[in-house]
Length: 457
Image 1: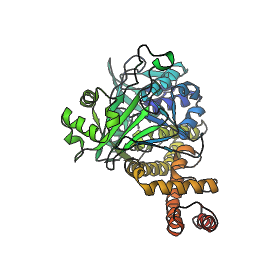
Image 2: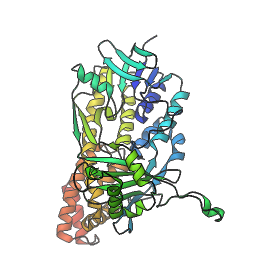
Image 3: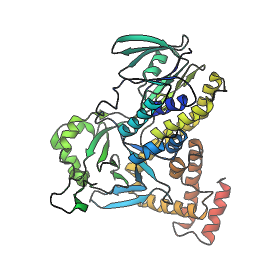
């Protein structure tokens, strides 16, 4: 019997790829260094909650998995901005009710995919198994597990083991790859905002646990050089994440005791602090995570091995596209490995097709961090957004804001969204310089149409 396809990493991306390959009749061995999530508690404090958008949804639908995932999604049609004084402002993401992103627990999503994989014929699951080495020439992988170390063959090795990929490291050690990691000077700390407890003696309609903030929004406390965000969970809680410079004032290096933590939150995030009784305990217990982008010189080796998702192109989380981009990788690779193509040609084409798109979303994710923590607070930002919305309303087929292209239009490649986005900025500059931000009509509407044509939009 021929060797199985081996996938290292049973996170959402690796597990989705395993399901896609198995449904094409391939034997798949799915190996994960962590314990089985169906039988062990989730890892606390290290996993930024996920935002599932159109690209990820298309991939899940392609694999027939959306029915399993949908009950665990919380729709977020927009951002809720929290000012220092406690006031809130809701900003819708898109033009209509269909343009929504969805919050989902990483642990819940991963468990659903693992359960689907366990039910799928042709998939062998191995947990608590760590990749030690890979020899693409021999077609072998070395795995450490509870019984010791074993070496086994593979027909295709897929590395879906994240930004710190053990497979990628093994290939680099063998001189078969190069990697550049661009760390961000900001770290993150995850915190939980619990659900509001039931009130004893209250009427039934008011006794169920509930959300302390609006559930259908991505909450942002933008503070210029840093921010707090919170995504809703299906159980009424929020997963909050503090993004802060590693050094500086404020910076994580200044938050060395409970008093400093309480002072920062009281000064900048008072409404969040008011609903976290265990703030300082969580802050002390949860690890401080690092952020950065990963750029690899080679994603694939002659039809024998390929890097997928974060293992090939990890990005910062500020556009909510890490998961969606990884799922899109899976759909593209599945299409190319359709059973008829030469594997070496398919993997080479996969890298050729996807690399420009992943480089584009990596750059846009970094830009979106500045927008989230700073740009959204600006009156100019609001006026430009309003003008862009008018252009989209008047010319819906020609002007789609960059954020909408990325989040809601999977038919538009990331690189194309980036290209059009740059042209849109130039158009907005020219239009606002001449007519300001008034309603488009008459001469301004005619000029807008001329600009669209001049910019090739």
